[in-house]
Length: 382
Image (cartoon, rainbow, N blue to C red; front, side):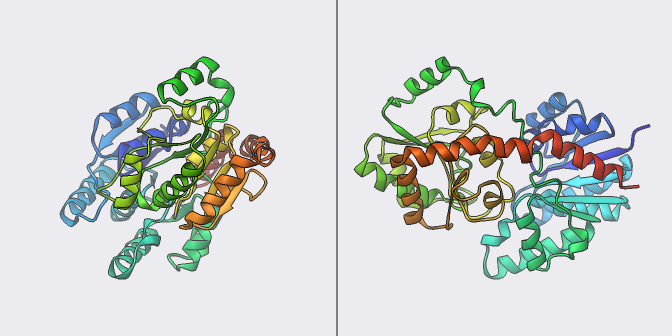
């Protein structure tokens, strides 16, 4: 009989996207059970990954009564299923999952850190989140930062001792499917059709952003920088691919106003497949304030795009300045604008960065490498 591993995220979209096909791979060696908030997406995860799933509703914000209810439900799941390992991802699932797993006597309790929202918090909220983070790690038997820089942050913040920390491979939670994220998979016909649909001309330079349209992703700085560029260079477009989460982390009103008034800023909302949008773009811009190990930078780089990223953990591990992209200070729209103009005006630099992008990803972050490293870790937990 296979030992059980329960993998938990706060929302099922994280299981579906962030851990895509990893769960199926691990399920060949263990019985994997996925736990997340109940929705049709959780049923999709069950079908796609070939695993059993159990719904436990969790929120992404501080909701004491709902959190207590979810904690009790997770405890009951663990007592019934008796897993060998509970492995959590995302902040709320991590806290509730680690506490419940410890209370239920689960022998191996793993939590992956893929980002620390608390780094942007201040005052009482920061103190509260620091306490919650320490509690999460104290209940875990092993903490898995998904980048070496993230590991350093955890040590510097004194959230837990170094001996409890381990980075899988060279970083990333799931690696990347390098065959899937290949520019060659998108036909010229698809590229032409999408450009026509978005009114993108052959002469346009297209800047691309992929991610949630929120303050922490640097959207305010990006929109300001692009708007300045576009006034001088009207043959430019900014393509914003991703959902708006104005209720959680709203962008500034001035940013919204520019996005509505500037016809060269194109918003798609959420899309199922980002590859066609990468294929029609020239320069990837990702001025985020904080990350764990950003998948979109892996994906864009794997598709031979020169990337402009913030000098933050994760981003500055995937991108080496002037090798496969440019690194700029976070929250600095002026430096971002300068980097965008440099790559737009100097095709030789842009081509050099693009040429180095894909080989770097294949060498370090191929998903099969990450999966096998994780499997080795599981196998060593007796």
